[in-house]
Amino acid sequence: MTAFSLRDGVLHAESVPLESIAREFGTPCYVYSRAAIESAYREYADACDGREALVCYAVKANSNLAVLNLLARLGSGFDIVSGGELARVLAAGGLAENILFSGVGKTEAEMRQALEAGILCFNVESEGELDRLDIVATSMGKRAPISLRVNPDVDAHTHPYISTGLKENKFGIAYGDALRLYLKAAALPGLKVTGIDFHIGSQLTQIEPFLAALDKILEFVDRLKGDGVSLAHIDLGGGLGIRYQDEELPAVATYLHALLARLGTRRLKILLEPGRSLVGNAGLLLTRVEYLKHGEDKNFAIVDAAMNDLMRPALYQAWHDVVPVIPRAAAPQTYDVVGPVCESGDWLGRDRLLAIAPGDLLAIMSAGAYGMSMSSNYNSRPRAAEILVDGRQIHLVRPRESRESLFSGECVIP
Ligand SMILES: *Cc1c(COP(=O)(O)O)cnc(C)c1O
Image (cartoon, rainbow, N blue to C red; front, top):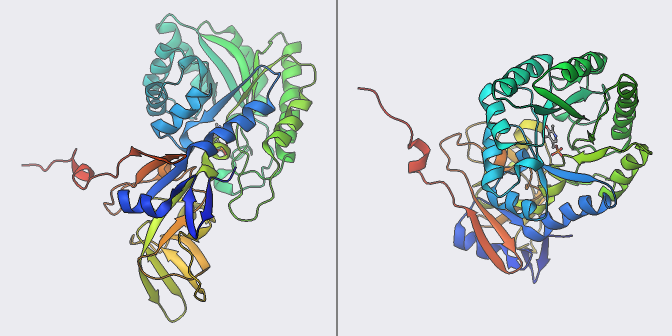
């Protein structure tokens, strides 16, 4: 599914020229494709066909209400990491009974909120959390459904900031502690042990680390069963990568079939937590060139989007393709594409060959995941607008923030 393509010399989102979006809504803005999100979801759902399975979209990748609503309408569940995300999912029409709650720092208030709502499962990440959840649930006269996030200690071969399955990471419960904690949880009155989960990192491009992790987890599941604790579900996490540049990736079906084949005859419901692979390539960041600056060593294209809009390059040295919306025939020059923020880390692309002039529109590709959801108001920049394209239709699903909104909650003291 290619959501974005050149037609008659203009880059389009589905059937809409990006130029007309920029004219109507200004720049910078995020542009998402409904068809791309839906087809990515269907790839997951189809690959699970015939199994009892639930795809729980990782909300943090892109938490716009319209995106959540599209997925909810397709039957998606959701993986949340905060009370704020829980509120979003419910507001978007997601069902509480299809929500997983992940994250290492759940507060008491968040636990209460999720228990009131009646979520599917808490993915517990420490003994302290297990104890706290038991107390909170008991005080409410409820039993909290739980899974332990077990850390399989495998190397995901991805960027250290998005690798989560190694011993040294803050995530999950050490493999060696898991048995003791399952037996403890099974005996606590406020908890109901229902599953197990793992998530070893993000932007993984190979299947092998997933399989290595799953094998260790299944060995443990069998051991646990021998000790009298039977699980209803196994949650394989998320983490499958997308193509940003020239990465070679397994198809979703290839990845899932390989994992599902390892389950053998075990009768476990399958839960999945994909984020990036559902929305990453369904979005781009549209920006306009303000200035071209020719330095002694480097040329800079200064654009109106910045690290506060898309943090991934500054945070992970991530690559995003930078594509002119209306390509020019002129000879290209090499540019660093940078924003107006007062940080040397404020770049969106480095050493890119571009034939551009001030006023041109550029598309920063593959920005549908961890783009808007990681944005900030740094440098007092209003957050960008978000637009969802559906065929020929353009929906403004979040207007650009106003200047007033930047300090609307602030006050001065007498
Ligand atoms: C971030 C996260 C995901 C989603 O990861 P992707 O790489 O975007 O698929 C899934 N599960 C957990 C626990 C996460 O923290």
